[in-house]
Image 1 (cartoon, rainbow over the protein chains, first blue to last red):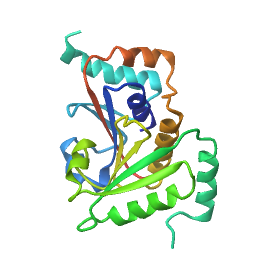
Image 2: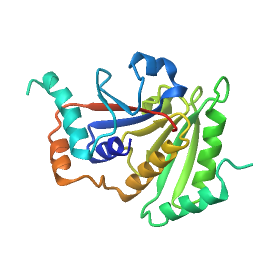
Image 3: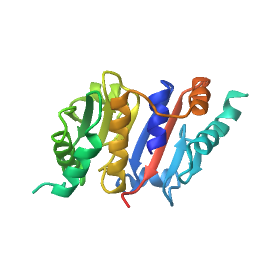
Image 4: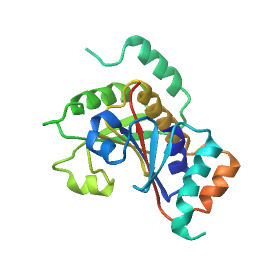
Length: 70
Length: 141
């Protein structure tokens, strides 16, 4: 969560929501949240687990690349 | 009775001691049919009393619809962490246990006005060419 907040702080393009999974069970079910932390990227892709800064950001950006065509 | 114990308050006071700038928490609640709404509001009230750098604005999710739309708040309880600027940092639900630490991290980051990320991350994020919405699901334990 901390890293997602830091990413939002750094870039105006980033929004970061922390979501308490047990309070929003329908949303958690929609995104197949069985283990936490689970980070959903633009409502589609996901990254599982707590990763170090570089790995976490790379994992997120890799999921974005196909959409940008880069 | 308070949700935060005296020992919690002391620890929070220490963590927030050095924060440089004011931070505003904008809280959206809907007291009816909401198990955790009242508790979240009380927790935030207790938290914002600990530091004079923190302030709390409480909005009603049902009646303050314009504000909810402005903050892209589509569910409650919701808490926006901001200063003069809204950075897109939100927490949905009751920030208890481990998540309370995340809320504090968010507050400290916003107060500093700097992400604290390493130069590589800053560079990569500067090149971002599309909106990125991260939804991080967690649990209190």
